[in-house]
Length: 603
Ligand SMILES: Nc1ncnc2c1ncn2[C@@H]1O[C@H](COP(=O)(O)OP(=O)(O)OP(=O)(O)O)[C@@H](O)[C@H]1O
Image (tube, rainbow, N blue to C red; front, side, top):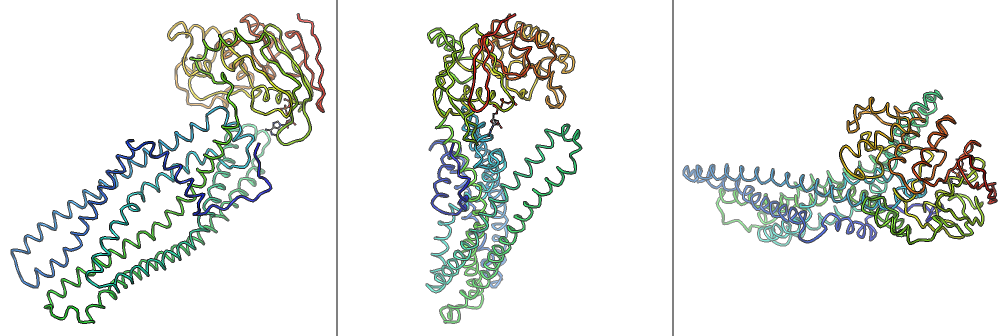
C-alpha cells in the first residue's frame, strides 16, 4: 500500500507535471481524431474565426462614418447604415452560436471525463482501496463530480479564445505595424510581456490555495453527509452540540483558506485590472507617435479623423487580444488547480488498479455464470485453500493471523469465532482480495458472485432503487427469466426471509421509493432482506459475517435452515454459541496470530 504520510504534499503548479496531467485529460476529452468532440471543437474554432472577421468589419464602421459625415454624402451614409445593421445582426447571431457550441461542448466533455473517471473508480475494487485504505488522496467523490464539472466549464469557456488568439494577434500586429511602424508594435508587445511576468508570479499561490480550498470544501460536505447518514444515532446520543463544534471547526478551516485565496486573488485582480485600463491609454499614445512625427501631415482633417479612428481600433483591439490572454490567466489558474486534482486521482486509481491483480472470475455478471460452472467443475475439490496464511491490519505490524492453513470443501460448513478485533472480518477481507496477506497464499477455486461465493457483509449493503433491485442485487438484470417466473421467485424468497410485508410498503416490486432504505428499515429487517437476496441468488458458498446478529435465535435458525435447503455451503462469522449447531468445523482466532481448528457436532 503506497503511503506518503511523512512527506509533505507537492504544491500544484504550472509545471511539467501539469502539462502531463493536462495532456492526459485532453486525450479523454478527445478520444479520437474523428470523435464528435473534435468535430464540435473544429466548428467552434470556425465560428470564433468568423466572429473575429466580422468584429474587424464592425470595428471599422466608426471610421467610415467619420469619413462619410465629413464629406456630407447622404447616399453613402444610407448605404453605410444598412451595412452596419446587417453586420450587427450577423455578429449577434455568430456570438450566440459560439456560446451555444461552447455549452454543448461542455456537456459532452463532462460526460467523457466523468465516465472515464467512473470507469477506473468502479473497476475491480478500486473504490474500496481508495476510500478505505488509501488515505493519500482526499475526497475522490468531489474530484469526480464537482472538480470535473468545473474543469469542463472553464475549459469550454476558454478553449476557442486560447486557440484563436495567435491568429488574431498576428493579424492585428501586422495592421498595427503597417500603421504605426515598429514602435507601436514593440510597445504593445513589451506591455504584454510585463503583464505576463506579473501574472505568472501571482498565479502560483492562487493555484495551490485553490486546491487546498477544494479539499476543505469536500471535508465540510463529508461532515454533513456523515450527519445525514447517521442522524438517528447522533440524535440518540444528543450529539448535536459536539457535532456542531466539529462541523464549525471544519467550516473555520475552509473560511480561513478562502480568505487566503481572496487575498491572493485581490493581488491578481489588481494586476489584471491595471493592465486592462493602462492598455486603453497606451493605444492613444501609440497612435499619437506617427501623428506628431508628421507622417500624416498631407491628409485633410476628415481623413485624419477617419485614420485615427481606424488606428485606434486596430491598436486597441491588439491590446485587447493581449489583455484577453492575460485575463485568461485567472481561468488558467482554476484549470491548473482542477487539472492537478483530477490528474492525481487518475494516477492513483490507475496505480491501485494495476496492483489489484485480476482473479479471472471476480466480476458479477450474468454472462459469467456458464463459465463459472465450468471453472468449478474442473478445479480442485477444495473451494478455498489457505496455505500458511499470515496477515496484519493495514495500519499495524502485529499479525492478526499467523501461518493459517485450511481447506474449505463443498458441504462442509465452517464457523469462524474469536474475540472482538481478533481478525475475523479481516480474514474475509483477505479472502476477498481486499487486503494483501503478508505471507502465505490464498487460492480461491470458486468464483465470486452468484453461483460461486457470495459475501453478506457485517454492515448490510442496500442499493438505491426498487424492491426488485434490492433483491436481485448485485445482478443488473433479472435471473433466470423475466416476467412472472422471476416475480414468483422474488416473492417466495421474500416470504422465506420474513419480509413479504415490504411489498405492501413499497406498493409493488417495481415501484420507485422516495425513501432511503437505511432510514426506514430496522437492522433486523435489513439483515432479512439480505437473506432474501441470498436465497434468490443461491450461491454455492455463502459467507455470512454476523449476518444474524440483529435477529432472534428462532429467526436465525429459520435463515440457516433455508440456506441449507437451498444447497449452500456456509462460512459464518459470529459470537453466538447457537451458531455452532449449523456448522461442521470451527476456526477460533485467539489473538496475537494464534488460531485453532475444532470439529463440531452438527444437529
Ligand atoms: N480499514 C482498516 N484500517 C485499519 N485497521 C483496520 C481496518 N479495518 C479493520 N482494522 C483493524 O483490524 C483489526 C481486526 O478487525 P476485524 O474487523 O477483522 O475484527 P473482527 O474480529 O471481525 O471484530 P468484530 O467481532 O468486532 O467484528 C481491528 O483491530 C480493526 O481495528
